[in-house]
Length: 316
Image (cartoon, rainbow, N blue to C red; front, side, top):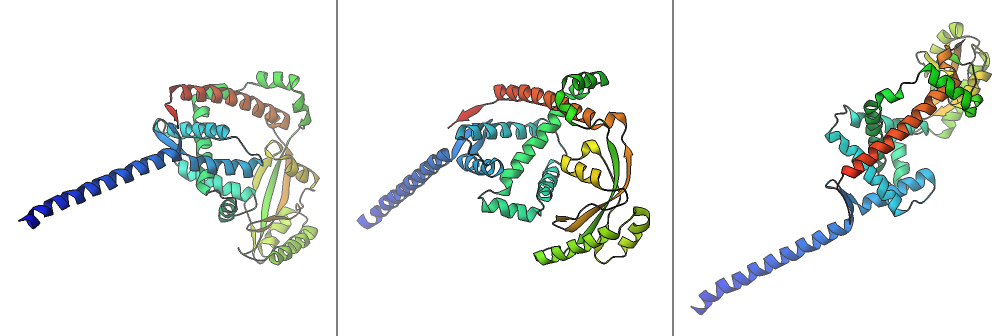
């Protein structure tokens, strides 16, 4: 009888031990999670890991080490911007983020995979950069749509700024529209540096004998592993200063110097050049961009302050 009555007591002790162990584990987990959270923005956490990742991203992009408070403020703003998707529907935003990431890699003369590898070497996950891109894409669309009328500038506004803005004098008064034919000497992915150098020499040889687009483009199409892309029209006002200078020095009907890209070696045939419409003159374009930037920054600051004043932000 004693043996029978002792069994329930032992079982109750066992259950009590299990309950205490679970409670202790839950309490420890809660404490660890609390230590991991740096701030909560409208119920969504920003963790210390997020802070660490963003700090590394800022370091590799600016070569400066921000303070923890600066990083927290950036991450809070980012949360508020991304949370706007609850109120505003932005179609294909994730696709736009991927496109922006891929374009960023292309501007660095790298593939998206290579960009991801470069980030990994610095200890940064690609999601950290993509989150920043996503926030800025959302923010840009919302500010443009919410304050659309503020970004319409009259000729009077532009002329007045031209008179007072000395910086615009640095931009040329007359612009040109260039019709270009991109020509790519394809190099298979993963090829050694020697392969790129060999194709660069081929591009230089073509450059020496290329005289005009109408006559020579059909011949270029017959070259092995060379792709001739459709014409593109670029105006002076759209071009970065370095490329603008290259095209200004390139004779009509000739090729630009070879440029190494992740896909191979690329040159541009300058097929036509004509003066742009007056409204597209570089000086006026520079003023429009300056006015747009001023309005965007003003409305961006005001709306962000409004979002912050309405948000529940809890520091841990």
